[in-house]
Amino acid sequence: MGRKRSLDNILSSEYVSISELVELSGVRYSTIKYYTEEAMIPFEQEDTRLTRRYPRELALKRLEEIRKMKEEDGWTIKQIKERLNGNGDFSQR
Image (cartoon, rainbow, N blue to C red; front, side, top):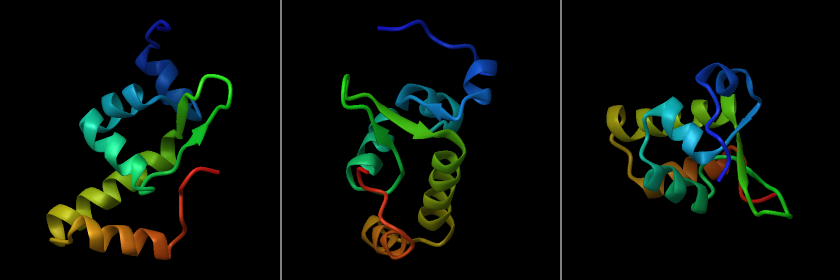
């Protein structure tokens, strides 16, 4: 396992790991993993190590959109997925 990056390094990076995304967003690891598997947040996956990398700004924005749709608008995960897929599918590229 690699060394943990400083918060300054994470905030200046274009891409972050799932653990770093957890730290930045406050969203649980299992929740982000679920959203990733359901193609609700964008990521890239390297072929060599199969490490998923998340575009920091876009992923944080998407997590906030999902939170708002769930908590403020009262939408179900199914409704959110349908809405997000209408705006573009972020499954593996």
